[in-house]
Structure formats: structure tokens, C-alpha cells
Image 1 (tube, rainbow, N blue to C red):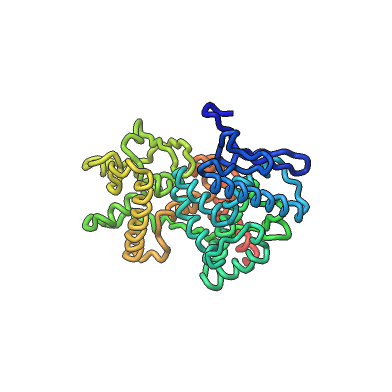
Image 2 (cartoon, rainbow, N blue to C red):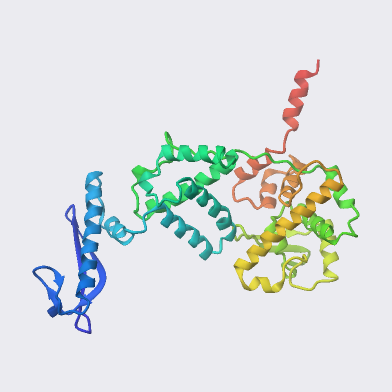
Length: 390
């Protein structure tokens, strides 16, 4: 009994000799409770509403227990409690919305921007119906893959990325007890996700020298784009979001020390002379705490705004880089990301994988070896020439 003299109304659930108790959110005084019929007496001002809620909860629990019995499932006390709690939140749409909301709360804005349209692809495919996880079958996902390729004209890599998001959300539902593992549509004999290796092409030394030597003094937008691209390249392909967000405080004692936005790793690199020349160029007219003239200090007050501005400037920079490539007659697509590929291509097998791992900021050496294999062709090319040299 509470201090105010009321007692909480508890729903007792017995399944497989397991007792689970669930508070329905209301409490009444003993004199307002009918112990025989187990309802609130009419003497209580909210008797009708509370009794309706009790009936609703009993119906929901009965449905959960019946479904479990029909599927020969033995629910644990924890699973029953969780299913009751999430009775109206067990659809794909509900869990997907919660997943995307969590990404925003964790300030993983880039991941949210990438996954939100992939979730929408699936919602559009099922015509925005509130589908249950039990109905997301292997057969349905195969049709979804055909839909993405035929109707949305997506490539294999994009199709796999859509499936990865659905798998993530499905795993979340399993972990929360909203669906049984036996309904999992991924794995051997089901839908298997295999990432298609993307084609990585970088600029060669001649092309980079052309970019370095180009006279862009009359075009400030192209000049800034070229400088930020070269800085990324000189620093082993530092990511665009990180290079745009570089601050003067990150530079001291001839080193660049910053926190990677992707994984919050602390990175420390000696600044090469070529990169330092560019940094010194901007030091003369610095007007904010940022090295490059894109972001303003006021953007940092809101992480979401800062992320949005960074993405916007990335797009603008890529447009300027493309114009530079066209003017210099470079027939490769030039973007900020290609700076990383360019470094890898020129590095080739000149640098030990262990050192490249540190330069690339990879957590696993296997990732470095796999990445660098895209750019090492000397042995294969030599072998091919040896065979054909007759």
C-alpha cells in the first residue's frame, strides 16, 4: 500500500509455471476494488476507463501467450514482460524509427543520413504498410532486391547496403525480444549479404603534379577546393569531414593532432612540408578557429548544424574539383574521397603494411592489406608480361 492509501493494480501472468507481474499504471484504494470480479468498483470516478484498460491488457497478454503456444515457443519471464511492454511497438516501422532516432541522439548524423533513405526504400516497397518482422521473409527480401535493381536502378553495392540496414533493425528486434531468432531471414541458406568490392581509382603522380601546378589564383572557389584536396592527399587521405573541421588548435610542434569524426580515434601526424605551405597560406588571413575558410565558429554550437554544413560544403568542393579536372583534361572523376585512393595508388607497395595501417588509421591490418591490394599490380603485370614475352 502506498502512502496515499492506494494499491497498484498488478496484472499477474502465468506461463509455463513462470509468474510475471506487470503494473498497468493505475492504483486504487482497497474499498474501490472488487476482489471477486477483479475490477474497479463504480464508486471510483475513473472506474470505466481503468476497467477498459485492464481488459485491454488482459487481451494483449492472452494474444502473446496464444501466439507463443501456437508456435511452440517457451517464453521466459523477461520475454513476456518485454513483449507486453512493446505490444504496440513490435512492427518494422516502429523499430526502424527508434533505430534512426537513436542515431540522431548519439549524433551519428552521417550514418543517419545514409540509412534513412534505405529504410524508406523498404517502406516504399511494402507500400508503407506496418509490416511485422515475422512477415519479413527470405522470399520477400528477394523480391525487394529485384525491386531495388529493376525499379530503383540501384547497383549491387547499394542493394547490399539496404539489406544491411534491414538486418541491423531485425537484430535489434531480436535483442529486444520482439521476434524470435527462428524468423531471422539472413544467413546460410537464406539471404546472405556479400559486399561487392567497389572499383578504386586514384590519380597518378603526373595528374597530381598538374593539380599542384595549376594557376587558380583568379578563381578563389577552385583554389580553396584544390588546397583542401591536396591537404587531404598529403595527409594520407584524411577524410573530408575531418579536414574541413581542422582547427588551428589541432596544429602545434609541426604536428596535426585531431579526433577522427568516424570513430573518435585520436590521430597524430607530422605535417609534410607541402601541407604546411598550404596551412601557412591560410594562417595569414585567418578569421575563425577553422583552418580552411568554409565553416564558421557559430556552426559548432549545434552538432546537427555543423554536420549539415560539412556535408553541404563537401558537395560544393566536389563540384569545384570536377571543374578543375575538366580544365586540366584529367579524365577521372575527381572528388575529395579520391584523394585517399590516390595516396594508396602512389604508395603501392613502397610502404610496409604496418606503417600504412597507421597512416590510414585502420583498426585491423587485414583492412589495410585488403584496401592496398586494389593498387598493387606490379607482380601480376610482370607475370603477364613474362608469359607473353615470346
